[in-house]
Image (cartoon, rainbow, N blue to C red):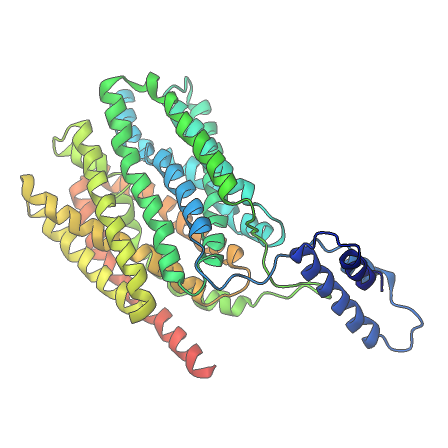
Length: 450
């Protein structure tokens, strides 16, 4: 066989051996022998099968079983800086609502243009399982940083919408591919790996709001584009950190494409979707509309941004602890505690005033964001293959549900006020317990059957 001779000849000449190419060639050789052995009553193997095998791209080695700090840290850094720029949007909305006299519905609806590209995340994830698309992770901080830094300088609504769509495409690519590549290099510590991913994004998002309102108060929106430098440096460092990373699935798909088990996908995504629906109003109130909620109560622009920073900073600690604890005590227990605690502390927050709200706000952030890495890990626990595709479905569902909640909450606040919307989010949140128990019961049944 030419493939076998190529391997032997390369070694006998003393050439440098590339283990990835050897692995791929051996896989192709094995599949070729299987096909030849399985062809009945034919004098030669069909050329179409030979072409399918021999033209396969080199596949990555088996997924690593150890926690790779360099890869996980590089992905987390790209996520953190990217979401720092994404964190510009909520305080910008509050500023634009006041500046142009927009309704809460009108201002909040601008975020739909940022969320719209998330519908393409399953496609992006599926492509990343077949092709090495790590470049999209590396470029995300630069692209999103550029769009968000110039957003306040847009001269027309059409230009603003176009910039939000481009930033949304960058965000969709990062969030479809990043968690899957992160879990690939987290080994058996999936909860820990997801906590690094979520922590970085959460911290970046929190400080993004603080950076925006600080620069706005000191210099105005015109000086904001200087922050693009941070995105450019981050993209370069991330590219170097992921130089040997590969987003493709380690599964060798040669003789035929494996049909995805949509019954399993549906059985996991239905309860996960129910959890996301129950969390939607709360999520929107604690992110998109939270600065506007505080400004409605008389807070300044800087204080409204600082409030978001408090929530997400506390969430970093919560998500790190929850991600690690879920590896030992189970995802369902952690999600149940997080859900109930968040709902209770949101209602307590409405009954406090002044500085007494600060510790309650920290507790809200601690428990609310702690659920994010655990839920992502629980979804990915059910799928060892095509993780980027599955993650794309999950995140698309999350973005669609959140995008629908944004105009709903905006209209609700126009009819009543943000305080009533905040209270509604607290009341709806415990409905997610049904999805948590449903998903946890399915996982237990799957373990019993195996």
